[in-house]
Image (cartoon, rainbow, N blue to C red; front, side, top):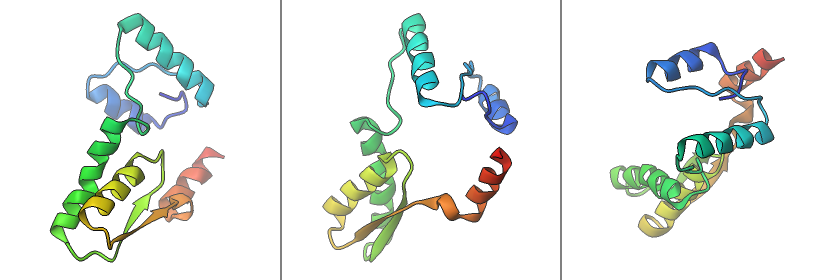
Length: 120
């Protein structure tokens, strides 16, 4: 977990009983910490968005939406790592081909701008 994570997140993760390993807030530090944990514990790394199992799981969100509202004109899917967007595209393609999928970057939403201000 990045060493600058909000305390509320740290507390929540600890509350679930997890062991937290802190690292600097950059990609290299995260990958190094991950590899150290994998080497030490023998754990399997499952990529949070670039893994077909994750994408398939994320596809169920859009599938359930399509089942609930079959005549959707479009689905607005957030862009983060890409797993939810990929899954949404797959479900729309197979279960509702006429439904358009738009990728949304939430950078300018009110809650994100508050977080950005707090980082400064």
